[in-house]
Length: 323
Image (cartoon, rainbow, N blue to C red; front, side):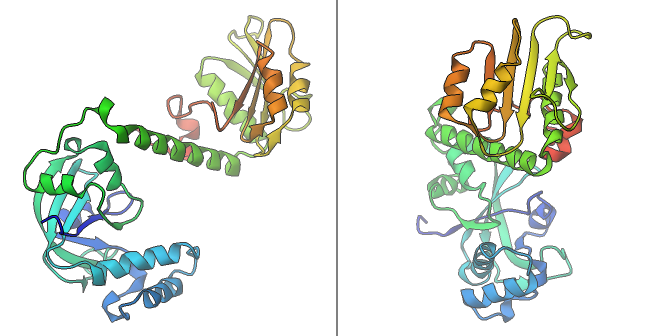
């Protein structure tokens, strides 16, 4: 049993093939433009050539990945292999066995015409698995081999409980959390850098300050004298703290001159804040550390948490969804 090959599979990015998988007792992959994969020569070059032909918009680096998944689905997956499918709809991990060879069926579900019959054997709640096991089957690929945590899935298939590891003792949790945080941060910054260049970035930062309870005044587009936003708690802007904000939407390095210039415009009992999508030089960071009323915010260290403070205005831009 330990030599059994275990495949992980997803039902599309949004789980759109979930009904097909569970109601029709099958697994399937998309790439509908490929046509019947059984007519292609059973080698990677033939599959790569076909992917490149029907999906000319794909980046060169994605073509071998796509071709490899399709080749495996058609020619490497064997009868008797096990399948692990994490369903987004019922929050269970479905375990099954491959019982049919590849066949092309563009009628049942046109978006997923490449099909194999499976027999679903058991459905296990996600919470029964370690974080490491669940992270492994969260692969970005549609079809992949399950290796690292294979024993855990085999035990679940046999109705045995995997060894219980408390969350605080599960060493994989920290790695998973760190990876998720880094991926989310990269996604947010990419969207900000692409779509909020220049003055729109000042509006975005002002919006974050609004969600934190501040009232804001944003300078008009054009020369602003070094101050993009003035934030305050009261309606008139008289009561402290008064925060003067400068934003930099570039991804370059901000040096001491820019930081010193901002600080020169910060009065007594006021605070200065410089927000950038890039980085700060060592000299700029040292200067800020010497000033108790000056803060530098950069993407690598402490960019404001927008997920918790989000509102409808920027939800679409950042790809947030309600949970």
